[in-house]
Image (tube, rainbow, N blue to C red; front, side, top):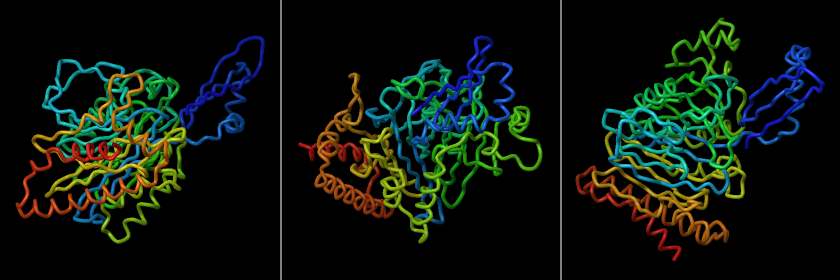
Length: 454
C-alpha cells in the first residue's frame, strides 16, 4: 500500500514542503518554516524515523526467479514469477497473435509510436484493466517479469506519479518487439528513455506508483534491469540463479547502463565519483530485503543437486512461510503465477495458473505452435469486476470453501500434465510426435478444470 505522512512545523507564515519518497511508495512530506529547513535536513534520519513509526507495513509485491545451467535438468533455463497485486484485482491470461497495428499504439495511459518491424506473438498474464502485463512469454521464447522498486530519484523524469509508460507496458512491449533477452532489454530501455515511466499502477488507488525492475530471460542467458526514472543499469546472468523482490540489487557489476548514468548520479549527490559505481547504493530507498534473502535461500537449497526443474520452481512460488506466496485474504495476494522452461534444442513450455494463490491452483502448460489456441475462459469480460469464467469457478469452489479435497485433485491433474509433457518431449525428440499435437494444450487443461468444478 502507499502511505502519505505529513510532518508539520507549525507557523503562521512562510510554510514550504519537502517530499521524501521511501520504499513501498511512501511519500513523507515535511511542511517546514524556511528557517527550519536546514535544521531538519541535517537531522533527516530522526524525522524520518518519527514519521515511519506510523507505517509498519513493509513493501510487498512480486517475486521473480531464474535458474540457468549447469544447475538445471537438461540444461534448460527456468523462469518463475508470482504476481502479487491488490485484493480483488483479476488477472487474465491472454494470447495475442497478429495484433492489428496502426502508426500509433495506445498503451495503458499514453500513446506511443508503433513498431514498424514485425511483432511477436505473446502470451500474457496481466491485470485485466491495463494494456500491459505482469509477466509473459513470446514465440521467440523470451520471458519477462517486472517488480516494483522505490528509489530516491523522484522529481522531474523520476516522478512516478506522472502518467507515462507503466512497467507492465514495458513488459509487453519488450515481449512484442524483442527476439532475444538482450534485444528485449534494448527495447525496454530505449522506450524508457524516450517516454519515461509512471502513473497509478492500480485501477482504484492512484497513490500506488513506483519505478520498476525487470528479469528478462531466453534459453541462453538472463538480464536483470533496474531503473530509477529514465536512468537504468543492467546485469547479465549467464549461469547459476538470480531473484528480485521489490528492491534494487545491482551493485558494481554493470554490463549496460543509460547514457551519462555516472555523471548524473554524481551531479545529484548520490555518488562521490570515487571507486566503483554501485547502482543500488546510489539509488535505492529501501526494499524487502527479508523476502529477497528468503527467495535466494530457497533457490540455493533447490539447486544443490543441479537437477532443478519446473516442479522445483512451482514449490518456490508456493512457499507461504517466506511470504513469496500469499493467500487471497492478504492485502496484496498472489493473483497469478508463471513458470517457463526454455530450451535451446527442444520444446519450451510456459505454465500459467490464471487463478490466484498457486498453493491452491494448478499450473497449466502452453506451447507456441503454428496454430496455438487458449481457452476464452481465462480472458476477462468487459463487466465491471472483470472476473473471467475460470476465476469465478476457482474462487467459488476452491478459495471460498477452503476445499482441500479439490486442491488435491488439482495437484493430481498438474502431476499428470507434467508426466504427459515429459513423455511427449521424449517422443518428440525421437520424431514420434508432432508439435501440432500441442495446439490446444492449455485450452484443454483449462476446460478440464472448468468441468471439474461442474
